[in-house]
Length: 477
Picture 1: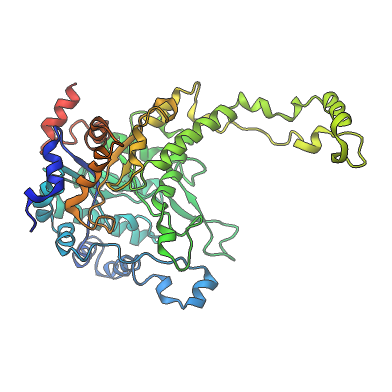
Picture 2: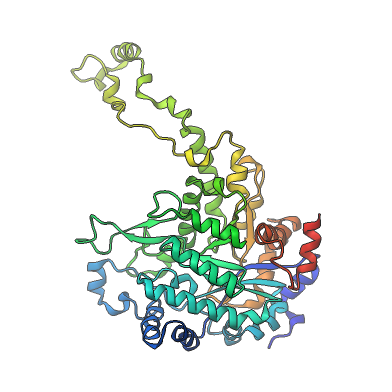
């Protein structure tokens, strides 16, 4: 094993006066052991069904079974492949074995890690309810029992399915009350069939993002999160919808896909008024960076300024002064008119049949400053160590409302994005060395913002951990 003293990340951590909290690392599950838990939860026959479902997330998907001609005919998206580090076998083993992970955290420059399951990114999306629920329950037992012994340095994360509020609430109860887990992972969306198209186009779907236009009322789920003092974290692939449907190029489908799914659920929660109804809740959106959030924040403010209910009066067709339009038509119309005498207002803007609605009604926004409480305060955005856009979160001069968005450090250790675990914190600190971030910005990124996120509902989140003392000192201020 490499020496900690030779690690650049360890040197960075030694330079800092505060801990480094990783809010999005990943462990890699040992498949046969997960299968044991499925059999324990739901029997051997269910284990036989869940096994292929988990394997189907990689090499046995439809894309691999089809010929090039069939892929083109069905427009089958190129499947993910080779998502784990293998050249560095030590890193692969680190993602598998908890004690090894803990032994190497100093080398990685990390004090504490909120550690997400790799299979959790897909298990909550399984279409068959029995398979989905058995997979999530077994995975949660695996994470709690395998990784729970090391909670001084690691917070294992539970996977919560969201196809219905009932199944979400039941798994939340089990994960938090029975397994004593402090963090949860939720899908960013549920794919639902379009009834009118289901018969002729079985692959057609719409995205239920739990806020606006949802199939169910998800307020009981947010209320349950608040009761149990856990943060809903969203981390789902966005491949296979929108423009990310290449039949040949995985990178084309992968670039920006986490950001697209995070944008969908974040926008839905905001416009659906969830942050208005549950002001104490916090939400995290992982591995998509902060660029999309910065853009969404600015766009929402811009749209509210132009399209709040009062502003909509600027576009009412009834406003048109037909007498003035007629006069201007005769003076300037020329070839635009053809053989017509003048332009009629309804010929340009239509009638009043638009039936205007207040798209911001659920947010109850009175002034632009309300965006601070409804967007800036509750939302946190996971950024990887190598993301050059992260520093823009702290650019108060250019962000609307002079805002500093809540960027949180998410290393993504365990996945292909990190070919060398020992370099992650050093790579993140390059933004400071290059003058893109101040040391204060970096402190907010790796310590202050994570503390704000995880302790907002649960002040005892870090109790019994190696960072407890530092967290308590910060909270006391």
